[in-house]
Amino acid sequence: MAPAVGLAVGRGTGTEIAAVFEKVLGALARAHAVDIGIVRSPRLYHSYVSLKEEGGIGGPHGADIERIRALTREDADHYESFCRTQAALGTRAVFRTAINAQSLYLVRQRLQAVKVDTIASPDASLLLVRDEAQGFYTGENVHGPGIVSRATVFSREITGKVVDFALRRARQEWPDGEIGEVLMAYKFHLLDGALDQWVAEISARHGVRIRLFQPDTVNRNLIEHGPLPRTVVIAGNEWADIMHVVLLDRFGSERQENRCTENVHLLPEVHGLVEYQTVHGSADDIAGRDTVNPIATVRAAAAIAERHAGCTGAADAVERALAAVAAAGVRTPDLGGRHSTTAVVDALLDTLAHSTDDASGAAAALVAGP
Image (cartoon, rainbow, N blue to C red):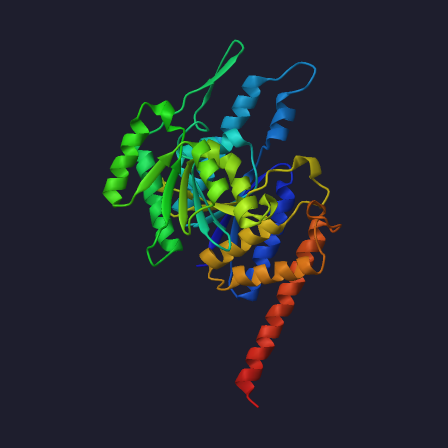
């Protein structure tokens, strides 16, 4: 049976990004002589901009808060159902473009998600694991006259699952088993000592030293001293959401517009389903202009092709092609270029096709002999 990949599309530049994903994934599949089916969610999910427009924020009659809340829940319920259905069918990867944050965070909480990114510098490798399953970004809004309140829950069970995952992932990242340091960045002073106790128990269970710090302390230590080789940072989502871009810039020499990350679901019912996304948002202000940066999407397609569809070497081949295209000066305006999204993707695929042809020719020559 051909591997299947889920596709969920949001508004803004989501339709353009989805087209890039399908085009690149299709090219990689053909190059590796494999079939990859794409199962597209039938719903076009809201970005925050489209939600504002439909809910009347900024309009003459004021925001229709109940309408916005209803649309948010509808998007969350639909996307959760889509993910659960795909997991039940055996799908192992979903690519999702940016959607409204509250809908997305509701789904992440329900499916107990963590976001994973490895940030590498010449001197160190930092594994960032963002706890999306609990914390201050989770919870439902409750509205009263002139107020909005949110209830936030932390639990020993979820904390243990997140740390267990982070340590497993670290051992996959560094198979010799050596981890330089495990840090946790949480606002634990607000939790009456509960998180301290849970982390101590988890640390003892794993036999691994886990250091729990306030976020500002982690900031200071990382910025002043840098990460140790093979550092694991497990972080509350509210801190990691802000610091992810800073860490990429300081230690990865990479722009967020060029990065894709993966969200791994820890809920047993959807175990094994990995969601890939671009780090950048919906970019509604440039929707329809064919100028959105496609690099993160291209990388997501390559990662899915290699990890979930048997296209061995796809990620490295794409990185070489991206480097060649950039060296030729083919870039979107956000990277200082003057090329369209379509032009960058076409140049990339042309480069990939030529490199495949060259490799095939060299292989044939070796088989034929002198």
